[in-house]
Length: 512
Image (cartoon, rainbow, N blue to C red; front, side, top):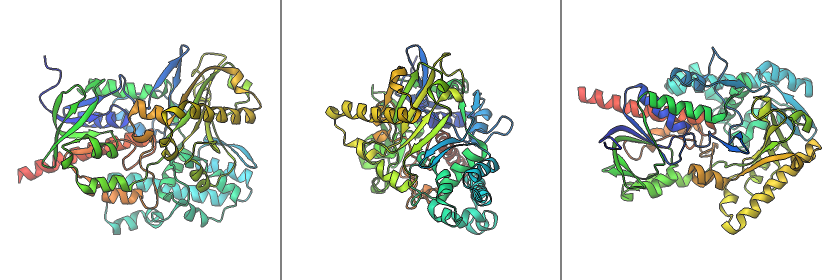
C-alpha cells in the first residue's frame, strides 16, 4: 500500500497550532489534507517535556482569546466548534508589576483593573477606564472587520474609534489621556508580548492585547499546552486528516507560478493543489521553492523589508518547596528597572544582562502542575534576534549560562531566597533551542514586528498583493496577527479561509 495518496487538495507544512488549525478548518469543509511535521510530535512550541519524572510546560505563559465557558472568545469558540475539548483553567490575575516604586498585583476586568490602578495612583480611575473602554471598542472592530471587511466610508460610520486611532502609535494615543507616569507604567507591562516599544507600536495592537487579557482574562490548559496541540491533532485525524511525523519538507514544487506539491528530505514527491507553509517566508523564498527562478523579485523584497520580532530565552525550574515558602506569591510577575518600553526594546538587541523579565509560577494557575511540595517557576526574557545571531558555536555555552545565572540571581535577590539552592530540575531554552526544535527562522517566535511602518491595518489591506505564487499560503506567527499561540490559531484559520475562498472563486468562474 502506498504511503501517500496520489493527490491531496492541501498539503500543510508543519503540525504546530497554525498548521493544525488550517487542517481542522479544511477537513471540516470536506477537503483532503496532509500535514507533514518534521518533529515526532505535534505542537511546535506548544509542547511539554519531562525531567526527573515531572512534566514541564515548554513555552506557554497564558493563552488569549479563550474566554469563559459559555461565552468563548474566537480561539476558544473555534476549538470547541471543531470538537477540540481542552480543559481550560483561568489564570488568577493579570500580572504582578514589580517596577521602580511599584509592587502591585492587578486583576482582569476593565473596571476592576481601573480601580486597582486608581488605588495606586489616586484620581486616575475615569481616565484609565476610558482608555480601556477605547481598547475594547477597537478590539471589537478588529474582530468584526477580520470577518466582514467593508468600505472605508462604512468603516468610518460603524467603526469610528478604530478608524480614528489606526494611524497612531500607542504612545501617541496614551498621551491624549494625560495620565501620570506611574499609571502609564502600570498599563505597560504586557508590551513584551508584542515586541515593539510604545512609540512604534500601533495602538490597534495594544488595544487588542489589553482588551483581550484585561477584559476577559487569560487561560492555560490543565495538561499544559501540549494538551491543546495533541487534542487538535487527534481531532484532525478523526476528521480524515493524514498527519505524518518525522517528515521534513525540503522543497515546495512550483511550475508556471503555481504550486503543485512538495518534496520531503527522504525524496517523496507529493502532489496537491495548495500548500500551506508554517516555514517563514524568509526561508521559503530563499531556499525552499523549486525552481528558485519561480520566486518573484517582489517576494524577496518583501521579506528583506520586514523586521523580525522577538525570540525567547527562558530558565525553567522545578523547585523543591511550594511557591509560597519561597516568597513566590503570584502567577505572573513582570519585573524591570524602568517602564520606558522604547529603552527596553533597544536593550533587547544585546546579550544581557536583561533589564526586563517575566516570571511564571504555573502552580498558581494549576495547583497540580507539579508534585506536592514542589513548584514550577520560569524566568523569561524575549530578546531580539539581532544579538543572538552573532553568537558562535564556541561562545554559545558560556553565553547561555551567563544569561541564565544573571536571571536566576536577579529573581533570587527579589525573593530574598537563593533559588539555586532549591533547584530539582532546570532547563535553559535559548533562541538556538527554538530554532533547532521548531525550525523558526533565527529562533523568532513572534514573526514580523508590528510597527507603524508595518501596521496590521496595512497588512490586512495589502495581503492580496503578497500572494506571489498561486496556491501557496502561509500560516504561523509570521502572518498578519503575529505574536503568540492564540494569534497562531487565527493565522491558521486565515490561511484555510484563503484556500476555501480561492476554491469557491474558481468554481464560480467555471460555472459562468
